[in-house]
Image (tube, rainbow, N blue to C red; front, side, top):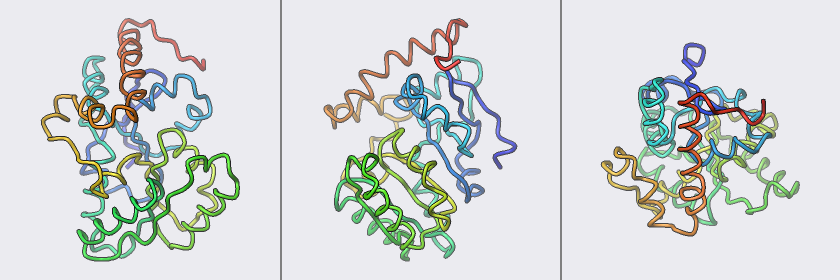
Length: 253
């Protein structure tokens, strides 16, 4: 499906113009990136992350504000495709497909276990075959990375959902996925594990549709979300205005 996808430019990145149903039904091998405001602002200064963009097979628009921005820029995408919306549709679509087994890598201790129990109950089988809660500083600890890789391989999972914070999770996937050949589909989906565990409630649908999910999350987790929504949101809007006016310059070109 990826060869037919149109790229929609946004700052120094892009998202693919796709719809949720097509992605759920037809994308079963490769690596997906769900791009939101926090990530796209990290791409303005993180060269290592920036250089990984073209290694992803699918890049979705995971932000209602970014979705509005594509319209304002005159290059609209069909719909917002967020990771937290995508994953439930994915596992329900594949609930009777024994070839799809999932490893959950991320979250605080015990959270991924709760998510696994909930998902397996919904699909009626042991689709989630393994979980892990890596140390926060995993990416500076070679022994911890080796342990993570061994756990994923031992599970036999064909899909790995990685929730290790935007930028860090993508770097882990691209740097080490060759050491986990059994995994066919890579899903760096941030806080999706928290949602599936039931420890963090999703906002009402109207809040998301009107672009206020950021405010809902900020109110729920002010300390954890402050940098993402208060520090990065205004500079993103200014950068989009510069793109509209033709003033934006890619910091890496």
